Length: 207
Image (cartoon, rainbow, N blue to C red; front, top):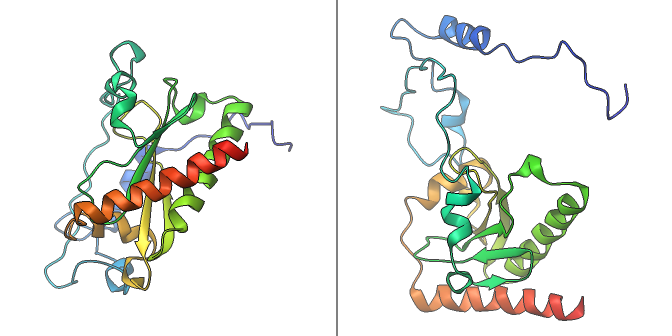
């Protein structure tokens, strides 16, 4: 099979997936919390923790915000609210934030799957540029890059800076931690934003 071939019988059987999950649940309809609660990075204690019961799938899914370019609130934002912009991309660094957090948007109203090969390559290069700029800030241990896409129809990519040495924030649990840590002081955050912008501007000048 080549990279362009797609088997015509491929499908994700959602009903069967839900049935398997419910069959594995306890008498109250809830599955066990599982091993993630024992991870040293998990932000909550196991005692008293329980999963929600699995709900029925909602089909068709409710529309996301900003699906239509004509009414997209992200498209309508002026450049002035972004920390950095160029002809293709806009990077926001708005506070308050508990850890350094940036969001990258394309100017064009597209979602990830809408990108052609050239735009996809440009996105990859832009992700690396932002990651390098944020990783260069003293005190940053690692930069996490996330794209979910469930809440908004305009592509946006998150960058979270894990503080150096805070290994309890490693991996997939970090977005949960960010909701429970106090905000950075305004002057500290402003200086980090200025550093990232300066690095991006320097890269633009070299290009």
